[in-house]
Amino acid sequence: MRALNADQERRRNGREPALRTHALPKPLRLAVRFVSRLARGDVHVPRHLGAASAFAFLAVTGLYGASVGGHVPGLIAGTSSSAGLSVDAIRITGHSRTTNEEVLAALNLGTPPSILSLDVDAARAALLTLPWVASASVAKALPGSVSVELTEKQAAAIWQNGTDVLVLDQTGKAIGPARLAGDRALPAFVGVGADKAGFAFAAMVRAAAPSIADDVRVHIRVSDRRWDLLMDDGVTVRLPEERPEQALVELDMMQAETALLGRDITVVDMRVAGRTTLTLGETALAALFPPKDDAAAKSAQKKPKGVSQ
Image (cartoon, rainbow, N blue to C red; front, side, top):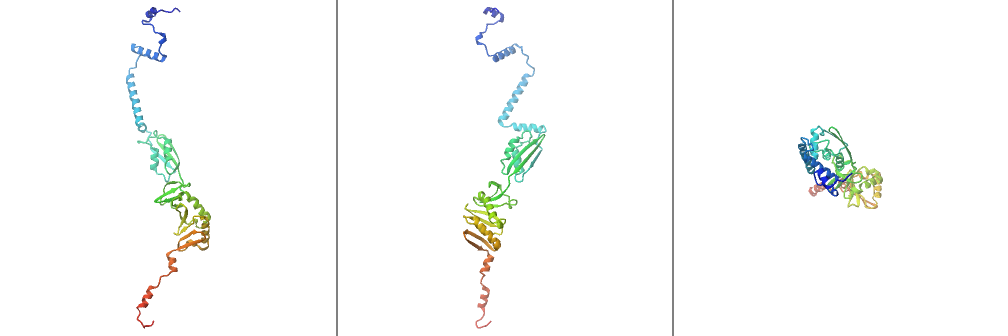
């Protein structure tokens, strides 16, 4: 093929020849060609392209603004609610301590509540932060049904520490406030450290003194070093710091032989090994130390002298 000189190329193309060494990249050349064709009127532009482009631009800008402002969930909720996808049924099972209000707050359904805006994983994570919830599952079904299944922690004891009365799980961890009516049947611990050592001590009482274990009302931790027992009949048993299990065995024997705890006593003090001290009740004290008959003495003083009886 014969190469054209500069004059021939100018006559053929009507322009100066381009320098091949400075050719534009291919994507940019395509863009330049399209702009050139558009300027010459070679490209057909749809009639409503401008309006459609403006609408698309405004829509994208609005969505971006809603996303930055955190309004997308609300838009979804409103749209889905209008489309008939609002939440109209919530079924909650497996809860006795957890309230319905706590569950609804964890679901975070939004206003208006929408089935599409419900994040199942986020709702389950929120439910697991509630004090009584051990496990949870959340499921949704179109058009507007949500089911929540909970498994709650088991209450194992109540613990009074100062003015706070809390429910403990089996590990000694506090779950939440105790209910005055429903939790009275649980073992009761009182005092600093009783939440950690209470279950082991209660097991010791049951093993060493089975005849009195069911009659213990409260296990009292004293100075976080020893224990007292408050019995159902109001008697307080003071156990030693060292070898409390031996004292419990002795107490169990005395109870079996003499029904000690059924007598009119208020305190059984076993803190000194080999010596048990009893504090008597008022009736027992009155029987041992009857009051003087002051009325008879005063009557004798009023009689005239020399008058025989």
